[in-house]
Image (tube, rainbow, N blue to C red):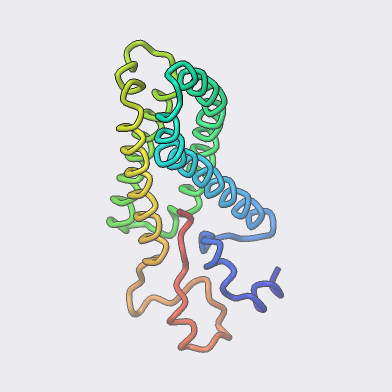
Length: 200
């Protein structure tokens, strides 16, 4: 593991691991959690964008009967991805949060942005569940599927923006604070440039 870190010093930055990862087991868990979190986001957000931009416009070109048949078939299959994806998001997101928090004690901006991100994510979960559900109380959302898919895609884009900003921002340090994750043998200039990243 030390050899890999020496040959590929930017590996943790590329994969966005928390800077306090220790040992091969935690390293493997960080990799797995990151893959699950990002992979689930790609699947659910990409699927929602596909339905909004491709499927719904195309469905208008077929008969109403065929449209209803297609809608029922798509909803029945998509529901499984929504429910499973929400579970994976919650598990991997909680893990990433617990791994990142030690790096952000007293970091008000990080916690504020993370709070906004969580609220937006829960709003997406609610809307996505309503669109594939059967609750009579939420039938209005299903009848305006196109409108609420736009909201989902917009909220997802905001979450991606927040995550991208937090990743690039890294962990703020005071000028006198040394980098705890950098070996003492590194060049001082290189040490100053490398900042630990967070698990977002």
